[in-house]
Image (cartoon, rainbow, N blue to C red):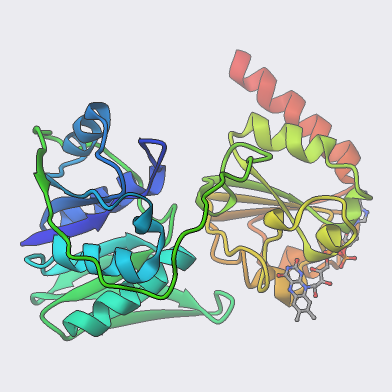
Length: 316
Ligand SMILES: Cc1cc2nc3c(=O)[nH]c(=O)nc-3n(C[C@H](O)[C@H](O)[C@H](O)COP(=O)(O)OP(=O)(O)OC[C@H]3O[C@@H](n4cnc5c(N)ncnc54)[C@H](O)[C@@H]3O)c2cc1C
């Protein structure tokens, strides 16, 4: 069975969640990579082959790939013969797959944490309502579309990697009312994109506005810097770092909440993380109710000790 995977890439570099999606696709059938935008560089094609893609279907539609209506037409054309379409569950991709589902009659589930084949149908798992419920959904249509959250599958190269064949896809793009006027990259403040990061270290009002230790800890763990809304509203850190109901939903393998009380609005965006560590002065802070590991103390005392111990253990 052919499983199409929409590949996320920036400047020819494939994002890590795309390798996770290809790894998951191999458990469902034969992965076929769908690449929108510019022609993929040779090393990207080689990487897609390493992760099991038999083909790379290229819809070279340039910056039109940024317009969901046009991207949806290209994705539908490139994945027309696939029974399953996997995408990373980003805001833009959710709009794209909704359009593809409407035009193809496919059943669609987004924000899934996993997908498997059961009796020939795709079944997905999701955590919903601020991670208070686990939901299993069976897609009854012949064609299934799944938006998968980053960090929910461990990316691994295929045991028998092959060369992926590049196939061009001719896409007659629809006329749309939107036109791209210009495209400018927003400089990333902290390297690792928040929504994709395998580790997130977040600081809240308890930082008092000093993010030096939070950034140092995140760097050491190879993670991204997150924040509570109160911290971003104070102007201590930009809103792109906000985690929660009105911010970014994150599902890293490790989430470290420092000086964050754990209000329901914050929890809604991080409660589905793999392991949750909390550092807080207040032993009754609600964040401890959902933490796997909690430290009662000041983040200004605890983080330097944690950094020191991690460095020591890496050196030994
Ligand atoms: C409609 C709506 C949507 C919202 N959406 C979001 C959202 O998306 N994301 C979000 O985060 N919030 C959101 N909020 C705000 C949310 O309700 C909380 O107000 C906010 O999350 C609290 O931020 P905080 O934990 O940093 O601050 P506080 O609640 O003030 O907690 C600060 C914590 O720091 C601890 N502390 C203080 N000093 C130290 C220290 N030195 N070391 C360790 N701990 C220390 C304190 O004990 C306390 O627990 C929303 C609110 C509304 C009404």
